Each structure stands twice: as C-alpha cells, then as structure tokens.
Length: 250
Image 1 (cartoon, helix red, strand yellow):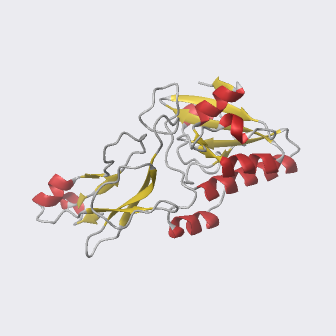
Image 2 (spheres, one colour; image 1 turned 90 degrees about the vertical axis):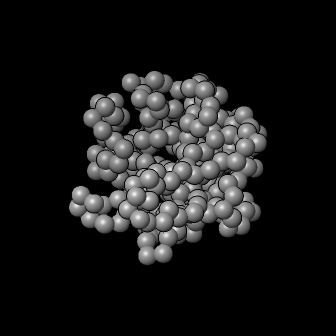
Image 3 (cartoon, rainbow, N blue to C red; image 1 turned 30 degrees about the vertical axis):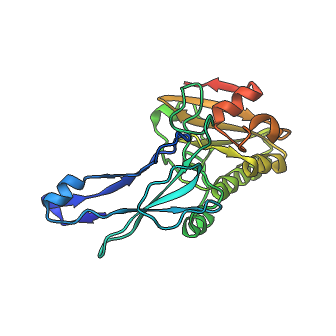
C-alpha cells in the first residue's frame, strides 16, 4: 500500500507468520506505520477472516485457535492487501516456531481465497531456468535446471498443478523422477501426497531452509498415514525423516 511519489513516497506492508497453537492470539504486523502516520495518513485496522473450512468472521481481533486465516488491510482509496496464514495444531512440524530439525513451512491451506486459487489456475509452471522466482546462483549450482519452480504457488491446488506438470514432463522426457523446487518449504497434506501417488512417478523435492538447500525424495508408493502427522499435515523435513530420504544438498 503506497502513497506519494519520489523521495516523499511512504508505504505500508502487511506480514504474518504461521506458528503452532500456543493459546495466544496470532496477529499480523503492519510495517511502516510510523512514516505513514508522520505523513498525516491514517493507519488502517487489520481485519481477520477464517478461510475454508475455518469459521472466523470479519473481526479486528486476532485469532487464537488452530485453523486457516487471512489478515486483511483496507483503507479507502488504496488497494486491499491480504496475507494468508495458518495456526497449526500444537506440536505440528509445519509451524514457524519449530526447532531446526522440523520444517518452517508457509501456509498452504486447501482453499483460502477464491481469487488466489483462480489466479494460480492460470499461472504457468516452468523449469527453474525459465522461472527464477526465489532461485539464485547458490541454488543454480545444486538444483537441476529441469526442476519445476513452484515458489510462486501458495495453495494446495497450485502445488498439485505444479507436481502434475513436473510428472508429465518427466514422462515425456523418459526420466525416472520428477523434480520440483521452492524457495521456501511448503507443507504436505493428503491432497499433495495423493497427487504424487496418482502421478506414479518418484518426486524429488528441492527447497531452501535456513540458508541451505535440501532435497527429499518421495516415491509414488508413499503412504500418507506414514509420513503425515495426526492433523494431516507435515513439513518436508518431517516427511523426509519418515522416509529416510532427506539430503543436505548445500
């Protein structure tokens, strides 16, 4: 959200984390409000909504319970800013407050805003050499250029679409594995595991985590009940730990 131009331009950004349940409210953060106020502008209030299937209606109070949410920053005359986040069940390997042995995974709710899902349905899925989103020189030395970049996808449907594209490319090129990449690790759920099973192709997933590049190899025969936690989610390091296929690439 921007106002002004040139040297006098001020802006607001909205950020949110996806921690495990702690019993405390999880608030999104507005950055840049001091400069915004100094320019004589009114800092907007953050509104929170639940995202299907979570029920939480248009309130200014930050949520406490596990579920999928979206923080919304609105101000008359400026574009609406929306940031999705999740409060994961206590002990989940998906939360951003886990130890390094767990996974710091962003929110991948099954369906959080219709607009975002529709947008991802039209997005192209390309190899990392074409789509360099969150892909730099450090990754280029260790992540195969034929890996498909899913970094811009934030929903389960988008990730599933990316996996299907990578599998189809692997089949066309007669490769034994399909390779995918994201700059930040996504969280696995039953729908994503099902896409790997139905693709009938081993998937090698490359991702960045705390300055390192890891890979996890997931066979098409993977059993969701063996690699996902009780809540039905799991970070990639947890999945790789259950399969014994995690590798520190760099």
